Image: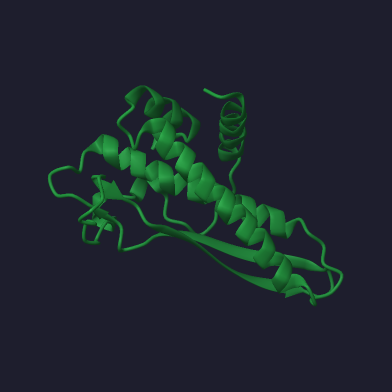
Length: 169
């Protein structure tokens, strides 16, 4: 495993062990019933979890701090191919959800740590941070799929399961 990826995974493991709660569905509750979409005909994959990170905020003028509510949701257009819905594949898809939740939590922690002297640049700064963290999340999603070969590399999937605490849900 490349050095940079190993360091990122170690950071994620440390972060996950202290991840604050926010309004997202617990990963253990994510089931095939959440995959309501139609499989993409040309996709070579057996499942696809589509997710989103949503937020809203309140600015406290007296403290200059933001209260940020973050929500990670699976989207109903997530899909699977009938007859292919194994537990191992569901665990892999849960990994995508956990990665999104980690980056959602990172976004919340980043914004809530910033002191804004006034509200003039709040929206722009929140948006800039969201875009940067969201793009990093997408890159990590790609690394996850590449390293696990979309769950087919069972040895690497086991490693990721350990990092993402998927063995404990």
